[in-house]
Length: 336
Image 1 (cartoon, rainbow, N blue to C red):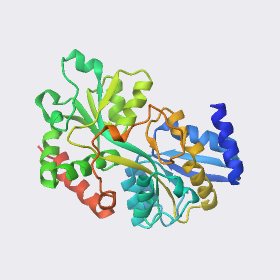
Image 2: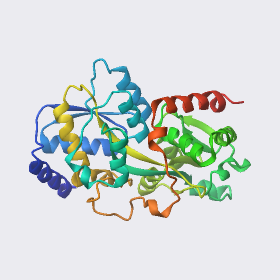
Image 3: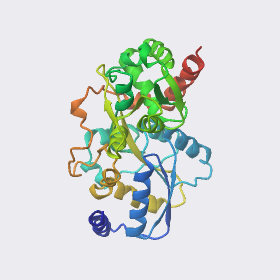
């Protein structure tokens, strides 16, 4: 860790990013990652990072609520569709980083789709987390398909988040619509409702429940499952054979924030190879967007799963998100 901090300090010095004052950040990744970034950035730059943790849906709602008088400078992480919506709603600042040329094509496409009001910082595929001990106890086989989750043996054994508050869960809906078509996807979601024991507020809560033996299966991003396994919990993951979507975790500078210059400095650091290694240091295994981050075998490999050609522009539009969430609330959540 000391080497990582030292390397970060050198990179910041080279870029002239040392500053004073403060920067107010909403962070929509795991708390360990948020806290590590905040601590290291403050220590190496002298800029105080006021970090607030919120899920993607809640973060978007906060930025919209305070748009007349923004209190936030930068939003880091969380599903890219919510960042696209923030850009569409005029909540975030158009900004072209000099580091765009170092990014993977999917991260650059996220910036282009938003007219440079956001940028991709990591890629995380959607899948299933499962508790190996609970499966063995009930002599069940781990799910490998969307179809598996609606089998009778999974009734009451699955958790997923609520799409009204969680970008993870909205990604589930948008993924299924793109795989099955909308009518069949909502038929599926109504059938899945029988298997769901709880719709949680945050996208990471279901996999934490799986890790602690509170439920058997979660619909989660697979990197979150890998994190729990690293912490010693008896969990593993699969991605569905029919295909799956992936989040492009993103980062956006808030328009008219109180500390825009400091927000831009943090943004540049978070896109750099040094800044992007803190996810891995915090046992977060998403694929970083900067191509110059050293490879690590624990990081998710998109080539080993069936990823759909997810339409981020369409399903990141605010009207489409509102429509699908409203339909889910009426036709699935309230379905008897």
